[in-house]
Image (cartoon, rainbow over all chains, first blue to last red; front, side, top):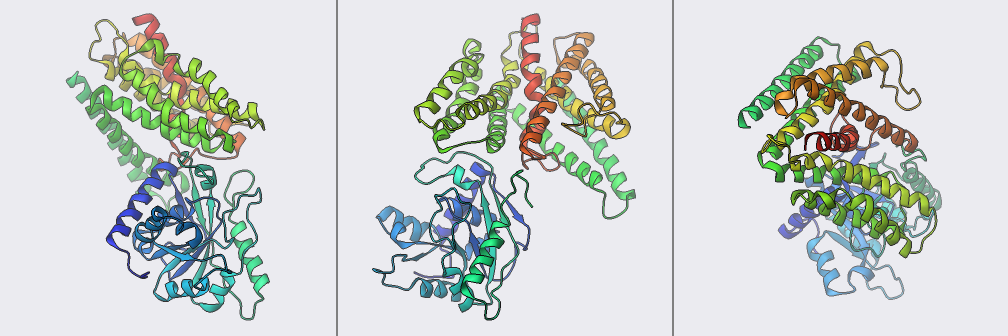
Amino acid sequence: MRYGKASLLQKASSAALAGLSRAVTGVRPIWAGVKPNGPQRIYFANHASHGDFILVSTCLNPAERCRTAAVAGADYWKADAVRRFIAERLLRTVLVERNWVERTADPLAVMLAALDAGESLIFFPEGTRNMTEEPLLRFRSGLYNLAAARPDVELVPCWIENMSRVLPKGALLPVPLLCRVVFGEPVRLEAGEDRKVFLDRARAALLALAPRKDGNHP
Amino acid sequence: MSDDTTRLFLGLVAVLTTASLVAGVLSWRSTRPLPATLDNLNARIKAWWIMVAGISAAFLFGPGGVILLFAFVSFAALREYVTLTNTRNADRWTLLGMFLIVIPVQYYLIWIDWYGLYSIFVPVYCFLAMPALTALRGDTSRFLERVSEQQWGIMLSVYCISHVPALVTLPIPGNEGRGLLLIAFLIATVQGSDVLQYIFGKLFGRHKVAPNISPSKTWEGLIGGIASASLLGAGLYWLTPFSPLEAGVLAGLACIMGFFGGLVASAIKRDRGVKDWGHMIEGHGGMLDRADSLVFAAPVFFHIVRYAWT
């Protein structure tokens, strides 16, 4: 897979997807802790729907969108030819193998290669779609490994609101509902910080962006 | 018709230009940064220019354009409404049906002028079909609440609003080919009443009508706004088949209904803990923030005119 350059097809399909997701969700980015333009980033977000990464990428300006790829599970997206075409040709994705018994490439190496090619990443640190009643699952170690390996890349928490109601697991057609993506203040890995402490802190930073019970944004 | 349309259009442009000039002078003489009220006023006026341009463009395409415009208003309003309701996975088919079937069918029935069906399609057929569909999915958790919220949403955002373009289908003797102007009359007086209530409220507002629901609705704003909007309606009688007195009374009734629409919408927002329905219209909030008065005014205006003039 080539990184760093979006093909014409990818540019066209990402613009079309952004238009579609705006038409359905009227998505509004809220830049609460960070400016839209910035250095290379890892956007880490809560995950409950296939629409999630489309929503985040819709919120980015076109230049940033063209250099941003979503990290997705190879086991799902390489399962058949249609998905493979969508993931590899239409969308900008970095496919990682989640099943560590059978995998041929180390997920961390694949993601670092993308970062080194100048890509920003959309990353779901829960590792899978959250199907529970909990707002956010425990984070897997991926985020820590990325932060430790590339300390200069900004880690931006993004809270995705309502997308799981628009397009829940197994649904084909989206129900039009208003969505928001709240971009919070970047999280930094402190020198010598313990893996678990960092992951808990990053998770808390993401949860803090969730709307309160009264529906208002903090 | 074309003369009256041009007069109306030029009148609107004149009003908006005046508003922009006044707001411009106020902003110029104000301290920096601008106070929030003035900032919001500027955003509202700018949004009005865009809305007037959009509505005018729809009118250029005739009844079809206006029907499409209000189908879009229904879509945006319903989307804002459903976002604030309790939905569960079992509601998906009902919700999709509301967007993909009910809205197109309701506006198509208005397009083909089938009064007998578009007046009962939502309150009879959808009223029964929607809970049946939800029940078939088997999830009984908060069933009554979910079903009621869906009914309300479809009545407010689709059925009631669709009575604005439905005005064009009324066969009023002597008013052939002037149905669009009747729509323009309703929109201008009801929206004008919102603006006038806002102005009277800001200038003279002291006594709140319903302090628990909305701090911005005052008796001074209500009375001043509706009285002046009735005069505005009387002054616009040339758009309608009514005499000036009739036009003033009908405008007054529509504006009182519009006030209740705004009040009910505020109560729902207060219940759900949000300030605005959405953010589609800069300075105003969402589509329902702008359309809530029309939701209540349109069906009542429609049926009074239908009863007394056809």
